[in-house]
Length: 458
Image 1 (cartoon, rainbow, N blue to C red):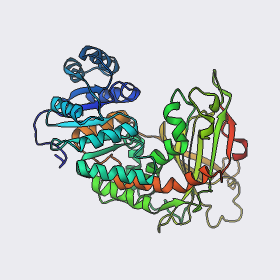
Image 2 (image 1 turned 90 degrees about the horizontal axis):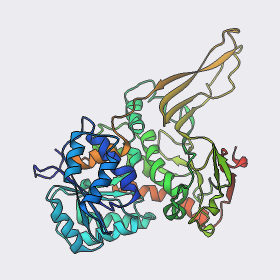
Image 3 (image 1 turned 180 degrees about the vertical axis):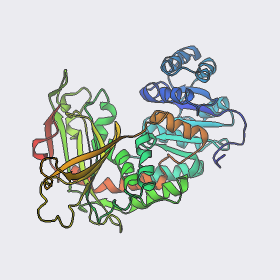
Image 4 (image 1 turned 90 degrees about the vertical axis):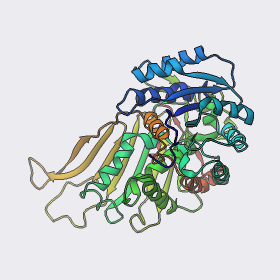
């Protein structure tokens, strides 16, 4: 039992602040259902909280609908007993009423916009919180480095760091977690992954999905903040960190913080970066308008839908190796992978020929896979080298990403949580790029939706 776990023997109560929102219906409740239907499921109480007027019965129907794809006895029990509380989460008296309904062994999940989460945390500071309470906050953690530090200081006044769970569902993805076993349990890989052997590293999250009605959030964030700052830098930390002594929370998160402290933009002024946004185009049978014509978009924001930045890691292992992080929407293909490109062999014996492309280690995030390039002698000409790839399918986890996250929250285990200093480092790393973009030192390109990006980038 972790230090953050309450001494109460009662089941943990999960309180969702913002129960009426899209995040709750689309991700949280289905994630909870996947957890309850798995061997790791255990009894839990569920309370939904929102400002809108509703009833226990209406909330119960929402939960039942979300649980339909993963039925279980535990899920049926939760549906029968779940309750709804109408409350203003920015008001201390309302939150006191919520905590009284939840009981002593509680986890608060802030499924709220960042500004409302901040108000709720300020309201909580006026209350005496139950011992062992877990506070789960969704990204983004602040809007820049200074606001992230300010939010962390506020949270320190509420509960110890190990009782704060900064949610990044990427850390719950089984493939990201597989990086630990792949790197640190195989001698064949770990010695190769260093500046001695690696030419560059690419971490890519391209998707065919476009704005999909998220203008209210996305038009003020863009691809750099939405994906690179909050997700891909954490993937970089797993891909580049030194071997930890254990995968306990303190060792693992300490290793992530160490490598991110050594990470910086390739150019100090942030201009080793690119940005673009999609124009009108077609993806499959869908015709998409230009991003600036999407409902709710303000063209004056100059929001990018495709972002790329190059980073350096100033440590012994990775000095001089560019790490290129890229993420975009409305692209031709879905591509989610980490690619280590190896340097050429120092000497190819005379008489062997045919090596036209560098060898790569590809770790697919979705679908979960592993591909390692090798050069072998050709069938027709033994001196003509042919590329082949060793391929393996990686195991998917029992739980969805949010199921994994909720399991950790309910167990009081912070291992998959983003530690406060890590959240601050992620903002520090992207700050020069954001500054350069706001000063228009990096032009914003365009690409037709359904293509691979701006032609000039290829």
